[in-house]
Image (tube, rainbow, N blue to C red; front, side, top):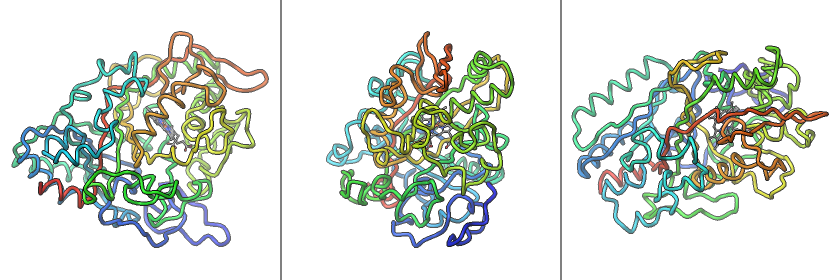
Amino acid sequence: MAALRKGGPGIPPPPKGPLRGLFRRLVPPTLDLDDIQALILRPRPAPYYGSHAFVEITDPAGGREAVRKLLTRVTSAADWREPRPAWTAAALTYPGLEALEVPRSSLESFPRAFREGMAARADRLRDHGPNDPSRWQSPFGTGRVHLMVSVYADSEEAWRRELTGYEEQLSMLTGLRVLLRQDFGAQPDSRNAFGFKDGFTQPVVEGSGVEGWPGDGRAIRPGEFILGYPSEGGHVLDSPAPDSLGRNGTYLVFRKYHSHVDAFNRYLHRGADTEEGRELLAAKLVGRWRSGAPLELAPDHDDPELGADDSRNNDFRYSGDALGLRTPVGSHIRRMNPRDTQLKVLSDVNIRRIIRRSTTYGEPLGDSLRDDGRPRGLDFIAISARAIDTVEFLQSEWINSGNFIGRGTEKDPLLGVQDDNAYFTVPGTPPRRISGIETFNTLDGGEYFFMPSLTALKWLGDL
Ligand code: HEM
């Protein structure tokens, strides 16, 4: 876990233990932490290990029994500020709620996008070409993914212990079928498939019991992330009925990306002749060096010490860099969180924030220019009370278009579905337009989930 600065005047020492670097200090929580699922608030450990299981409910009574059993394993956020060896999260798709025979009046109280599911929303998500649902890996988009159960652990032993517990329990249950198990983590230094450290910027949820570091921004009203609380607009967002089903729940968007690291490496070679130049271009595409150091604070050279220092590595804005000379306006992190960038299309960035709990799978390819045929990539996970709307917005406006930053048809360099003439612009005098950018991450599938509270899981199990 990241090293810590000792703390400036007026900043009390951070909490002890492995989570110490992630928040500035503890304050009394006001949310129902013992009813909220841990994954919403608990940060990913470093190193991390785990699995996502995608499950079909084949019989309603058996499914409800499984939910009752699961309830004993799903972890609450009660102790989320303390280290823990492993925790479990559970979430259901709309077909999953139907499979449990949730009453029609409740089913109809869910938002339309959730009911339709990710595959049916491909147009809004701009999931075309290589990302089209017709090309997804089974079982995504088939309607058979009902339940997602995720285990996160801070060691291989803790992860295996949890899995053994599940396997024993599963062998005694009927009415369930595990369609796919996706193991993740265990990468050296917890880096993603492209060799970047990730998971740095997370919104601070008001009432969750912590204060963020400078640069994390002000705490965001809890209703943006958890149903049943005031949102940024002051009102409580619509939530599924009855209250025992909706309150303290949230939405989770899962997108499984296959990373084409060989194509990324070839593009770096196309844009730069030296190792140093290639590292700078990689940082320009993302907005951070591979160590996590932000370009805004380390514009010319990587600074791994800065990258590892949670009290500093997120403490930046873009207003002093309107032209993107340090952090290109089209880089991944500046698109995904423009902070104080003057946008060409007005938008409230504070209602576009997501909690990310993404996990990397597969072994690193390194700097090879040729694919080895082995799968690697990112299980992208976004959590918020508006997660579906936000991801649909990000996909259509901030990822697959450049209008909001005056960049026309230029797309997010990591996520855009690129055409043959695609390019990335590195601002400067003169600016450099580097063509030949490819779709570095293609979508293997995904689903929209509702993540119930512990009370709601009980309600579902007892239906
Ligand atoms: C394979 C797919 C992806 C890769 C390799 C990737 C990589 C990264 C990296 C390296 C960072 C900087 C470190 C960090 O704060 O985590 C980052 C930040 C971020 N990414 Fe991604 N990402 C991917 C997919 C996505 C998707 C699908 C979204 C949203 C729809 C997204 C939204 C964000 C956001 C919001 C940030 C934080 C920006 C900030 O607050 O400064 N990413 N990503």
